[in-house]
Length: 577
Ligand code: ATP
Ligand code: MG
Image 1 (cartoon, rainbow, N blue to C red):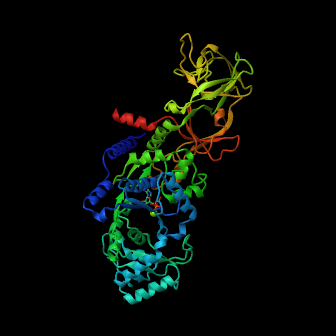
Image 2: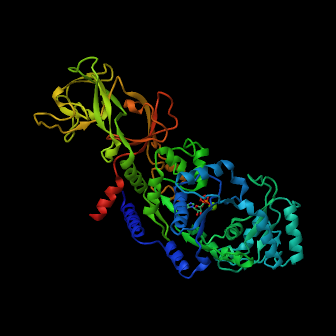
Image 3: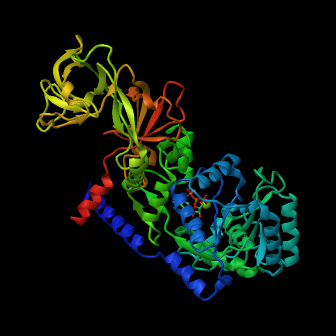
């Protein structure tokens, strides 16, 4: 880790601490509004996804904020699909978004809206603005429109069509709607100020001509309102009081207010911007996530490596852990990158409380216990969750041939390696002490393929009556009883903390080639034969795992949600130093 990474981590930590202990600035604004009885003391927010992709963990931050605030203030939060750009939108996304919001634990009751429901009303507002002389139909080509707009350093130039009469504008706009002109030939623009230092105020486009099949309105419209125009009006139509969005819209706020000032609306909502969530070792833009799916760098939107809610769910993340993560990071006005280790820390904390402990062997090494009677089977008691006494215990079968992890044996153990080695005694979890008495090797490769051991019948349950100690306890499964399983191990999708940092490199060059490792010859405890999709377990000493929907009868498939090693706790400890 470089010094810069270290510094970044420090500042993230401090941010997280600040936001955990103080009320955030958005809630302060709302408190102040309530004090002066603004909006008759109503609090009404909305979550406005564009149905052009699956929701990701960044959206979760916005969902927790908008629905969370509504809940805290006994207000309301709407779900609104911002579907003003039909070319990229799809019902598949509409459905997944609703599923994900519900899964996260929030509910919009009967308040599910679509910006497209307001197309007629928004059109009427446009007419009002034209009649007030504040909008005009412009015939500049898209390229010329851009040219005329100027730049940060250059003021814009008035369009030659800027001073068309109201009558001509009304006539042309009506004919735009009627489909008389080809795509892109004309636009409707707000008449504001081409010399404004804020480029957003330089006569922004309100409507464009675009013949695209809309997933709800079909081909009823060939003109579509721009986001900047549709959004404030949709907010006003729904009576939204606080329109919370991300920082990149800060410069659009004067335009948001300008549109609402031009028309008669019951409620002029207040736009408030906060910093979007950036998470290390992943990307968050829907365009890039779509690329990863389409180019098959991942198996789909719900690939467990994706930062999407569908991916996290399949990975074994719980809604509680994600909500807790969103609360911990808080909201700020400054962009930052959150270490993915914090997200992992949150799921570990949650699963530690709820996941059943079981034994699974991922890379099996056969062990024959030579002095254990052939054909004998014992049912040994195992604790389901030491963190939750209510979880009870279960029976685990033990027999003469077992599997242990290859990693838990070394023929020539290095210093400080305390697990099994020739001549050494260790404890089998919940079972007996065993001593390694011999190894069997593959004739050709020389690899150790089997161990010969003896057990001490006096040590049943894991303690020696003579008080002798062993330095290691390892997990195991009974060969005859274990269930064959496939286990998928995941690592970060990108090798670089910020794959977008280097502007000259394509973010895809940082895709982690080792982000998925599939182990097909694993063995799990018999109780996992019926593991259902969504159930989560701690495989003792290995990490947290969950059953994947690819599970078939007789062959469970598990995803590793997260390892047991808490990187975040380490970072935090260093901080406290
Ligand atoms: P993307 O850039 O990924 O396409 P978007 O902002 O265009 O994201 P929308 O569907 O328009 O995606 O987002 C719906 C809501 O979620 C918006 O209010 C947006 O501000 C918020 N949101 C999107 N990404 C993040 C993020 N990374 N952190 C916090 N909020 C986000
Ligand atoms: Mg958007």
